[in-house]
Image 1 (cartoon, rainbow, N blue to C red):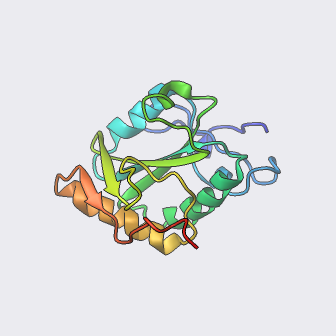
Image 2 (image 1 turned 90 degrees about the vertical axis):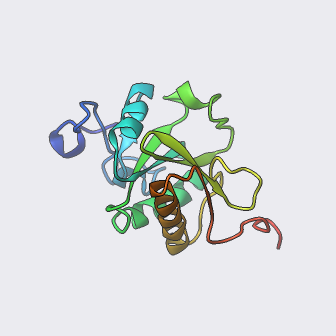
Image 3 (image 1 turned 60 degrees about the horizontal axis):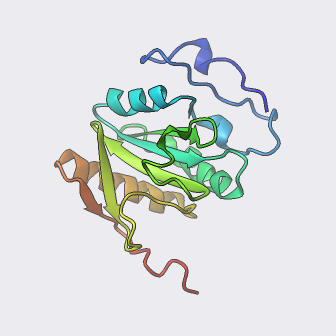
Length: 172
């Protein structure tokens, strides 16, 4: 896949290049071209540091991974509805391995949340409060989680409780 140009032909306000894939250029990624990518550890740090009023959602994984494709579809669909309180970035864990050990990024797809340079944890009932490491199926469910994170983080909470319990997610 070939990366094409800068976002709207310009640099972001932080000075790093955020590139996006052009539709139709990469047959393996469906929705990732709609979301901005961060291509270095520095740009990830700047995205977290530079956002004062919104939750920063980082999706770690690969654009070609089926689980990430499903999550990217939810993220792309929800990003416009969340634009006032959250911003989404994608990070390729092969191209930017800086955080793989620190954040224990061993799953195919991982979403983490930051607010005012602070990692916000969320109790989903799974035992892992640091991240969401599966693809969501419902856009509104994801938006509800982000709203909960945003409200809790604005009140200074480092751990918020999810509106839905996912402890039985894998029980059929």
